[in-house]
Length: 68
Image (cartoon, rainbow, N blue to C red):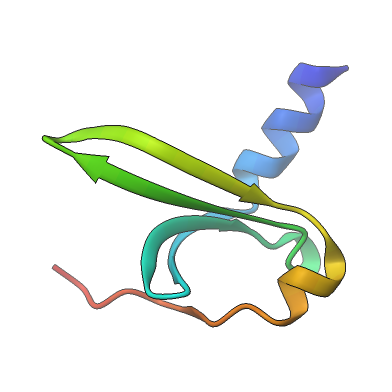
C-alpha cells in the first residue's frame, strides 16, 4: 500500500522554490497536498522538512525555479 501511495505522489511531484528554498511539491489534480524543503550542503541533502498541513500549505510562497 505504501509503495502505491509513494508512486502516486511521485507522479504528481515537481521541483519548486518553497519559501525561497529548494524543494519539491506534490500537486495531484492541481491541488498541493505536500511540500518538501531541502537544505543541501556539499552536494548532499543535509536537512529536509515535510509540510502536509493544509493551512500551512495554503500560506506557503511557492514558485517555479528559473531554468538552468
